[in-house]
Amino acid sequence: MVDFVAESHRNELDKQFKAIQQQRLAQTKALEKLSISTNFSVATLKIVAHKKSTAKKIARQSAETVSERLNQPLTEMPIYIKGKTVSKMKVAYSDENQRLLKL
Image 1: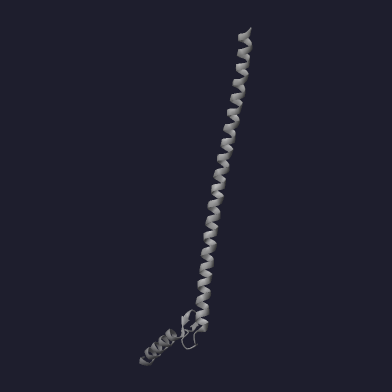
Image 2: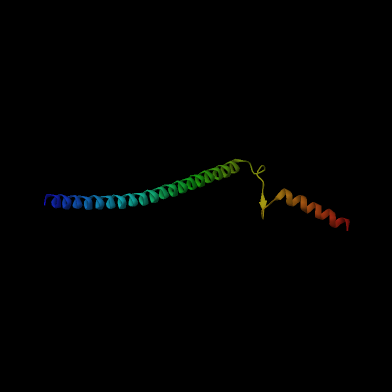
């Protein structure tokens, strides 16, 4: 009789132990999923921060370039017409004139 009660108690403890193990396994899997998603989120935030800082750096450099150009006298500033500098257009125009005069 004593063996039956002890065996029943032992079986009950085994069931509780297995239930706790299953619960811990489920919690571990949930923590791993959370860890993976957290790591992914952190990596994404780092990429966004890097792109943002790079964009700020480029904007700052272009603003400095524009301010430097605006501080120069107009004679030193190259003048562009349709993406070409005026001096290059003058050279091309004179070359074309000389070619036409030879005809």
